[in-house]
Image 1 (spheres, rainbow, N blue to C red):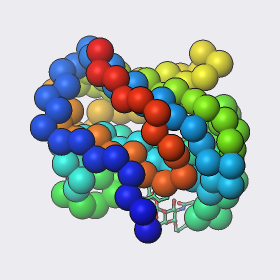
Image 2: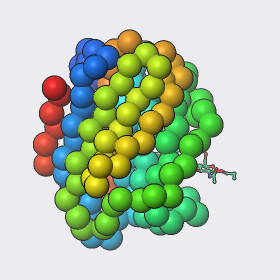
Image 3: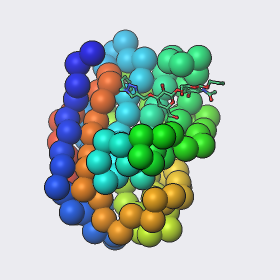
Length: 135
Ligand SMILES: CCCO[C@@H]1O[C@H](CO)[C@@H](O[C@@H]2O[C@H](CO)[C@H](O)[C@H](OCc3cn(Cc4ccccc4)nn3)[C@H]2O)[C@H](O)[C@H]1NC(C)=O
């Protein structure tokens, strides 16, 4: 399986924003944006599923601590289309993360790990990255 982008040692502070711009592949089954401390400690696994793991047009969000998945939260208001360009902006504080999506949609997810900074970003799956911006 092809691997997307992985960035480490980012030291992104609370209040800053991670912007991921790209194009969803035409036949996309799903993609994921992971942020956290490292690959085994994710404060957010943001996983839009077009058709995977038995889910159709569902956003699955979860955390991972020491390699163990947490409890999933699922969103069925699905602002993504296969083949479209899209932009995802993740901001956070020690209590929660906010994911800003197209159409002024927002998803809020608890900062279960209590992270004060984000070191790790990975983008995986059927997504062609065009730009990553930290602001
Ligand atoms: C009902 C009992 C079984 O529950 C199912 O258990 C599966 C295995 O844990 C759950 O699927 C996993 O959900 C995780 C989030 O909670 C992650 O999404 C797991 O995938 C990790 C992953 C990322 N990647 C890279 C990637 C990402 C996106 C597209 C293509 C490759 N490959 N594997 C994914 O395998 C799946 O979401 C879960 N379904 C439900 C309804 O709970």
